[in-house]
Length: 323
Length: 58
Image 1 (tube, rainbow over the protein chains, first blue to last red):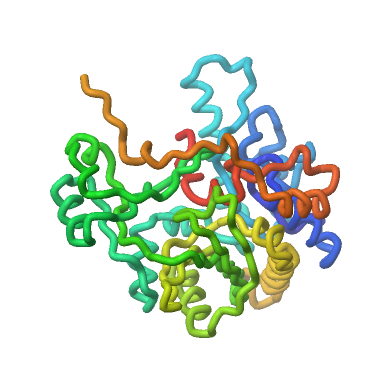
Image 2: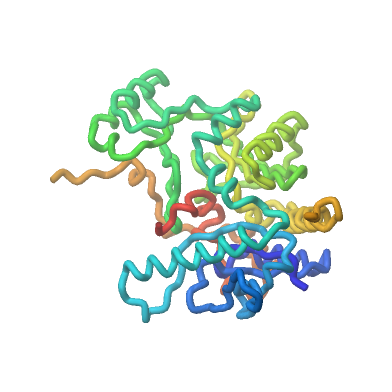
């Protein structure tokens, strides 16, 4: 019986690797549900009458029973869904996507009572950078001085106060497009209309070349140092990734942020100042972590599968069962 | 009408020209094996889809 579902995008490397670890190391079968390939897949059913089984389509063409599930890894539920070419009207194509997503989410919200990694609504909420920065600071982490604004006067005043150069970055992202953080100088901030188009994150620059990628899986914390001269290492070609033993206090602070945001996992980005002090930049509720394994040989896939197995064991204990 | 480029557009960097480090490619082949051809990093880069996935195509 399949008791674990991974909701993600079709062909997601993380899902395949973790499913393999779960099967080989823990004898746990996991179903992959491709949330961007629901249209024309069939197999998605929920009802409040006797008869139809509540099921979701799996990526391999089968179905999984919602009632059998004890754990859902809610990894990705958007992206660029495929819709059959036979649906030609652009508005109807959007409706197809929205309805399939709503049915997937609804079937789980209505029929699944096990463990989420992590709760879908907590995940959405936790993605907000303003909330993240506030929570991290309230829990004692150092965060960069930050302004989020679309007001030209406020933006220029903030930049001036920080010596004339700030880091600017977007509040969200776009699938398939890397939106890199960049340096902005006061003399480039002369177009009021452009500044007013969109609220943007303006932040003091944290100097240094040591970045931290910290994976919090429940109570387990795994940290890596990413060394790169680039301001934003994500598409850097010079990065060196090494395992790092995090001090207990910082590890506990990151666990606390994860808990406060209502998450079971979080992938944190921090930067280390030249004096060695870590500065919180952001937390990704469903951040990528296997590239860290690939670059550093840290066994993170095995660690995540072990975490899933532990969560599954807890969800099966009598105390956790309803009634 | 004046053409504006929102701040976000200044920081857009294409994936063109980027390739995974050879060490990462080797790891993929070892861990994933023959299935690697149909497997992807969401967003196209190793962490390029960390955030914003909830906003895509809505």
